[in-house]
Image 1: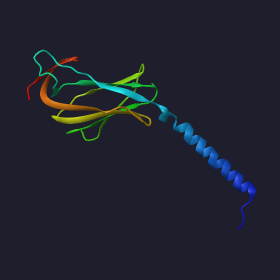
Image 2: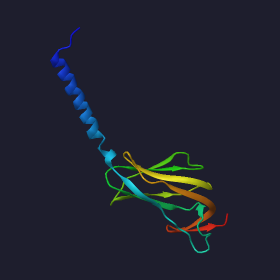
Image 3: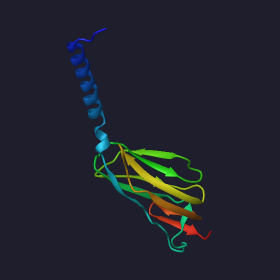
Image 4: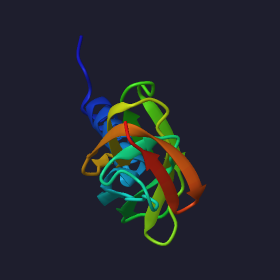
Length: 140
């Protein structure tokens, strides 16, 4: 069996077109997320440096591409592989992390193929949310 030169050239061109399409579709992989922070909030009378169950903490990350969805991934007790998808705006993406169980959590943000720094969180008390910015954390 012989393969003609034109058949090889046609196959090569088809493979190149498929590869080029893959590169175009993979463009969001160049997106970058960085600078993940987790809000420190505590109200008067709170145990200092302790985060509480029932409090909402704002996790925020800087993004290069406002058009690509950012996925916040939370790993910890009671949140096995929890994910929250957020559309960024003005170079940032954020979500409210509200632990329901005491323990150690890890939060990361992903956009395309880029992953932010991870933030570790120890939740050791019970909290009472006073307002969006303040939570009273009681002794463990």
